[in-house]
Length: 113
Image (cartoon, helix red, strand yellow):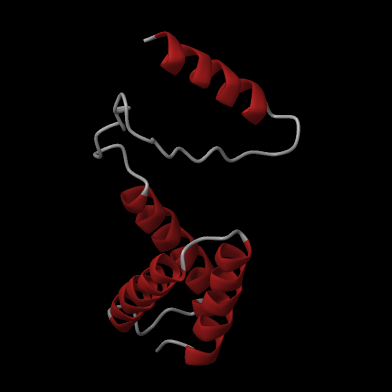
């Protein structure tokens, strides 16, 4: 049997962290639905689990990682710049990680071609 309250607390924490990181609310809500559904399905098949709380956290973490991997997976084609049209690229990283330098180098290469 699944502890609905614990599941809800864990999902709120994960969703808050994602939204504080400026992840689109649509993706956060979709992730929440998928993780909650998969967690409930798994826990319903394991009714005699003695350590449900600890296993629940591990299970949710695994499902979240799997879903994020699917969302950000490499099955998508890399973006190809279109010459003569505006191209929007988002650079994300910590301070001092080289975002500005990389943007400048990319703009220089784009201008050359």
